[in-house]
Image (cartoon, rainbow over all chains, first blue to last red; front, side):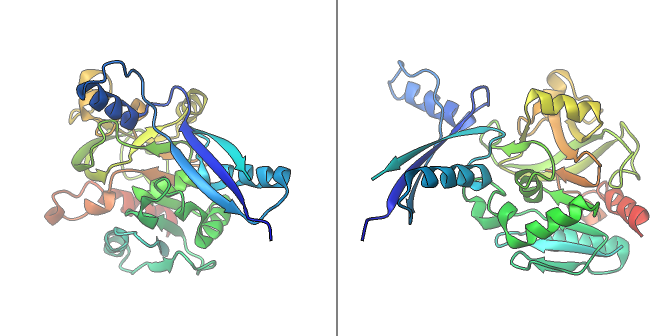
Length: 84
Length: 233
């Protein structure tokens, strides 16, 4: 049997949406001796296994998942990557 | 007024709001478990505060997709009033019952204490016992109460009078440094609570249910529940 398809979903804050966590990370890195660090944006990485063999169908389903649950499109963008 | 209080795994203010409702109605509201698809018809639905589903993914995101919320959305669309407090507000925003989203507090800290709110309008089921411009004192307790909406949505909210409350200084000042200081979480335009378009759904971060008895340190939240009773009985 074919191994299940894997998907990687990245969820990131839209440009212009304030990211206090990213800002705090940036400040900490500056303090730790990394002055080259400028703007930092924090996001989420989600790995999913799918019982699906058709890539186009998998992508469409993942898009639906992102819009319904994985991302809040008021403030977040998402990107989908299929592996294997 | 018959009320239903929804209970999700991780809710923790359902008892507080049930008590506040019982105080003004003399009747215990119905407690509805999140897994129930259907529940008795009521005049009011309450989404209480807490940490539903451990705040996994995003605050309120999982609860917004739970079976009972499909029914809540249906009833809200039919005009059944929904009061969404704190985590309930996060759930309502995630479910699309009210516009916008609640983000991590700007200073990254959990805020817990009393805040002052300016009543923006008395023209609603929820605020009819207050005067527009009145200042009330109620507690907040949250880490994700930083209200955000895009510019178009904000304009629509303001034009239609859908802002219910704003954080303000004790004297009612919302703008300037005083207003900024009074804003506990970085909410855009100091917004603490909003209505949906028909003003039948209201979401707010503060806890009016925890300001209904002198022993709690204040009674300024009681009028919200009294107003609901008057409007819905």
